[in-house]
Every structure is written in structure tokens, then in C-alpha cells.
Amino acid sequence: MLVENAVENAGPDRSNTPITLSNQIDHSLWTKALERLHGRLSTENFETWLAPVSFVGLEGDLLRLRIPNRFYADWIQANYLDVLIDALAEEAALPPCHLSKLKVHWDIDERLEPLRATPSETKRALSAEPAGALRQVEALHPPSGRDQGFTHREASNPAPGTPRTASHVARSTNEGELQLNPRYIFESFIVGASNQLAHAASVAVASEPGRRFNPLFLYGGVGLGKTHLMHAMGQAIRAAHPQAIIRYVSAERFTNEFIWALQNHKIDAFRQRYRQTCDVLLMDDIQFLAGREQTQEEFFHTFNALHLADRQIVVTSDVFPQQIPEMEERLVSRFQSGMVADVQPPELDTRIAIINRKAELEDIHLPREVALFIAQTVRNNVRELEGTLLRLAVKADLLKEPITPELARDVLRGHLMHGRSIPSVEAIQKATCDYFNLRLSDLKSQKRQRSISLPRMIAMYLCRQRLGTSYPELGDRFGGKDHTTVINAVRKVTSLLEADMQVREAVDTLEKRLG
Image (cartoon, rainbow, N blue to C red):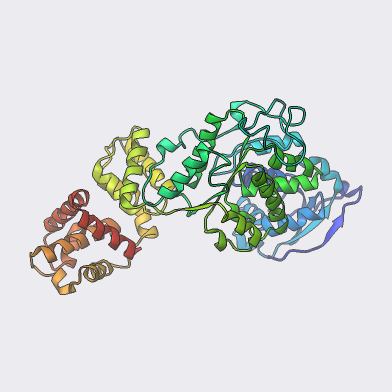
């Protein structure tokens, strides 16, 4: 896509200039494209960056857009131009390649400045939750009211700068301001070997915020429970300290608020919000700050202000602190000065417990063999694990059928075929032979010694679960066995997985090797 760098100041009469439009892209289509993006982007991103952009017209392959200032052009060009063009193509029912050579001409019109977010509009924008997560909402300008903070250290250890008194610190006790998921509490968090340290550290922080494990750095892959622990800490601290100001914010939102504050000359209010009127700062996805030097500089000083005042800081990331690219060394050093705890993908027993707990909460009757099948199929994402269970329950309800292994296999067919597919039955057979130190001919033979028959049954079970291969076909691939033999093998392994630790370990190890 070619982007024309021409950015010119719009004269007073530009709004009256005739606009030449093609028969495919016009004002109406532009409006629909923005509506489409409004449903995809977080509210604060849309209101901050896209809402102020005005469509001028399409002249040949030149798309003219009017913006408040040059900063908008640079930011939109770097972050949102591709999605804007794609949305236009979708609304025009055109392949994206048809607009790949579209040039964009930016017209600066300072009269658009009033369209940018006002403080009240910013408050409404920040009150809307970003996609996929709930966040605490408070405006840059604090509401009226009195803030007691943490009473056990309010007098002896105030925040840096002006003493925290009722005359300048504001706090609303409205419960609606702290929007935390009521289901994300410590009692509903399933603890296993994969998350035991992170859970223990989170409980310690919630019991003595600012005194133990400060800062707390939680890292791990997507959907493993970091957000659950953040919500749980926030709610536990709120219960113990009702007047505490707890700010739960993503690094992306922190960045957007910082940029808005700079543009609107509200940096003092921004710093008061995060440095002075904050008892607990919970920040998700700190890796978003990578490469953003000015935002990192601001967060560095925010971190120091809070830490010196014994205010609790908790951050999450998808990787270990030192593995965050383009993160300033001094920030990495401060992250590592406290407790660093990882959250790993849950092991099989923990996944089964998570599914059963979710089924109990949602009042879903879930057979044990189905819970086991889901846990063996979805291994690396707790959120996906729970989502799979809900999809299964919805489909069973629509079909007026009970939840069965066959229905579960149908619901997870796409996952089996695309997310965890195995090249062939032979690949599973080879992996099984390598694990049990057998020859392939033994696996396909008629020998019935347990040292051979058990690996054969496990291989049949894995083929059935991973590939959905029919019983007759599996019988043929394992030396001409009858399909009833395969059925019995699958049932046998399913039952052994609950009673025999060695079988469970063998299946779990083979699952990991197969990917």
C-alpha cells in the first residue's frame, strides 16, 4: 500500500470544496467502515484515534482524510491505516488487493480539535471495557469524595509530593467504579503444580499489599490465569481495605491515557492519578510498552513513586522480564527486584479439575470421560478449555441431546484437525514405539503380552482421540484387527487413565511429544 506523506493545512474554505467520489467509496461507506471498526477495537482506541478523522473524498486512487494535527497522521499511519483500508474493502465488497495501491493524503484541519475527546468524553471512553478483559474505570479527573487510602500507613508514609489530605485527594466509594469479574476470586482458582507459586504470591500480596512481594511480576502464556489472579487480588484488597484506590489497567490503556494527557496538557492530572491517588496498581500486558521510550520513561517514574511510598505494584507479561524486547534495562531490573512467578500450562489433572469446576458453576452435567477428552485435547489455554465446555453445553442444548464423547469430538473437530493435527496414524505408532522401546511389527502383531498389548491400546486410543479415525480403519492400520477390538482398547485406556498413574503418564508424555 502506498501512503502519500503530503500533509497540508486545510484552509477556511476547504469544507466547501466539491468532493469527487468514485462509485464505490463515499461518505456513507466510510461511516459504515468506521462502525465496523468500532466493534473490533477497544472503545478508548476508537474514540481517541479514529473518531476525529473526517472523510474528504476519493479522487482516483487518492484517499483524502482530514485530521486535527500531524501527530494523528503519524500514529494512524503506523497503527491503524491497514485496518482502515481493510474495513473499506469489506464494506465495498472488494478484495483487499483492489485497494492495495491506494494512496492516502492527510489534510490538517485544526477546526477538528473540538471533536477530540473532552474530559467528560474521555471518562465515558475509559469506562467502556476493552475487548476480552474487564478493567477498573476512573477518569483522569478524579471524582469527588474522601480517600482514606490504606489507613495503616496513611499518616506515616504518604505518597511523594503534596501530603495526601482530603483537600486534594478525591475518591468515590461507588462500587460500580471497580469493575472486577465476581467469579475471578481466589476460591475459584484451581491450583496445581503449574501455577502454585504464582497463586501463593498473589495471596500474600492480597493479605499485605505493599509489604510483601512488591513488585509482583506474573508471566505466562495467554489464557493461563494471570488475569484471574489480578482480579482476585483486586477484590481481596478491596474487601479488606474498602477505601483503597485500586487501579487495574492494561499497559495499552496506560499508554493511551498518557498520550491523551500530553496532547490535552493534562499531564499533571495524569501523574496525580497514577502516582499520588493510587494505593494499588495492577497493570496487565506490560510487554505492550516495549519500544515506547517516552511511555516507559513515564512508567519508570510512576513505578518509583509508588514503590517508595510502599504502594503495591503488580504487572503481568507473556514472557520473563529479561525476554521483553526493547524494554529499558532499568525497568527490567525493577521488575526483578520483587517476586517473579510464572504461570505454566496446567497439567492433565489440573485441566480436568478446571473443567469440572466450570461445569459445576454453570450447572452442566459433564460425564467423566468427556471431561477427560476435553482436558486431553485442549492443553495450553485455560480460557479455551472453559470456552470449549460452554460451546459443548450450548450445542447439546440446541440438539436436545446429552453430552457424550461423540458430541464432544464433533465440537472439537476443528481443533483436532487444525490446532493439534498429527500427520498420520504412522506418526502416532512411531511415537508410541519409541516411548515403549518396541518395534512397529510388534505393535501390529497379534501378540497379547501386556508389554505389547498396552502400548497398542494406547496408540489406538491416541489415534482415535487425535485424528478421529474410524474404528474399522484403525483396525486395518493395526494389523487387521476387528473394529470391536479397537473400541474395547479405547474404552480400556479411558478407564485406565483414571486409575493407573503409569498409563496416564505415558499418554500425557506422548501427547506432549506429538504436539
